Image (cartoon, rainbow, N blue to C red):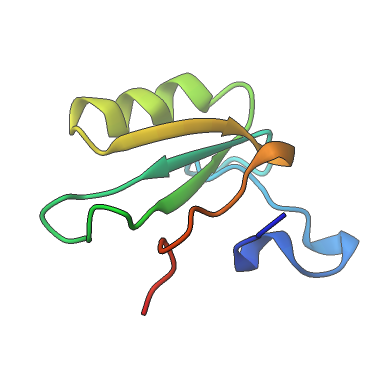
Length: 84
């Protein structure tokens, strides 16, 4: 599985939810892209716990940025998505 940097590290570095103030473990990866700033194949990611998945998805969705929501343990970084 290809993994962005937030997947590496020791067990003490368990990835946490991207919602402000939340320290719960990440369960979901929200892949997004701002078409005004990023190449179409580029994917940035936010992490979400169960509680914040819908809220973060809606935030990205109303802006037209949300591309995919995938279970954390199933996430694979798309080819060509990394920064040059």
